Image (cartoon, rainbow, N blue to C red; front, side):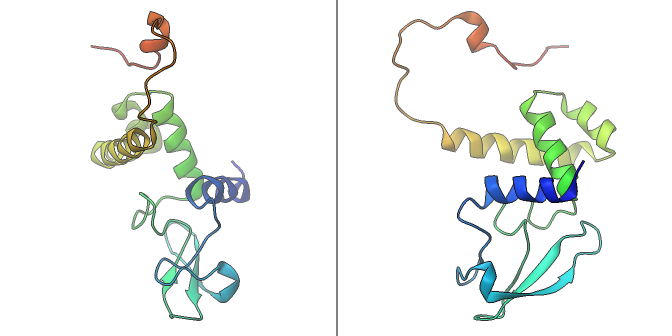
Length: 137
């Protein structure tokens, strides 16, 4: 996968107003490059206004985790496709606990973002209700 494309996708979906300092909300233009993270290989910025340090994962569910941007995109895709946690963990060589935690956080955030208004139609087809419901074993 293309690193830059993955970083842009994460910025677009997790920082829609642009990457900002989580401490004082200054824009990225008011920051300077500080270093690269050793494991996830992310650029870390230092805010010139408050001296706070942040990166692409700041204020997201991936903050403090050592995923590369490519791993983040793949993990989100696999969870959205309804793939089993154990299978994701095996394929990505992650612990099941880590995948479970990320899955639960993604699902919790998605549930919060759902509209509270009822559906306009009173009838729902079964295939619409059970899409990506998963399999029982």
